[in-house]
Length: 102
Image 1 (cartoon, rainbow, N blue to C red):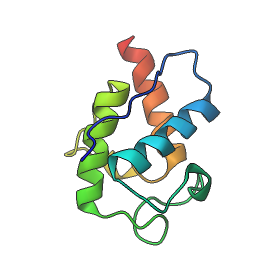
Image 2: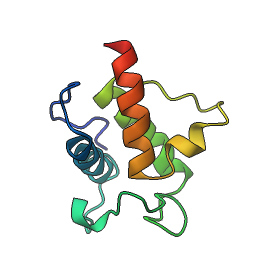
Image 3: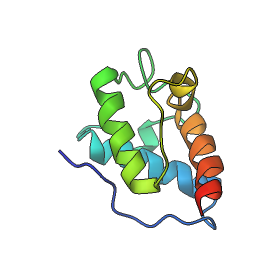
Image 4: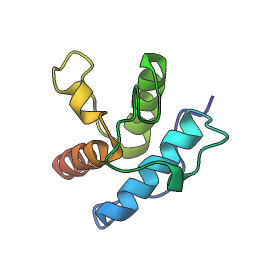
């Protein structure tokens, strides 16, 4: 299992680049062999009817994103599900929280 995504991120990364990196991180950390970044729609759900991820995937993805982007996710938080709702939501959360920690 891959626990991190190995490519650069910094505050100068555009939102589109960040979304691309998140998609690549999803694919590599969850070992999704038949999925490409182009298959993942930014606004569609990652869980359930969208990409079809489950709670185990959420844990693995959370660890990978935390290591990759140096952001913290609070599983106890009521907002946690919202942060993982879509690539758009993840990008927004990472961009906002990355800025605070830099």
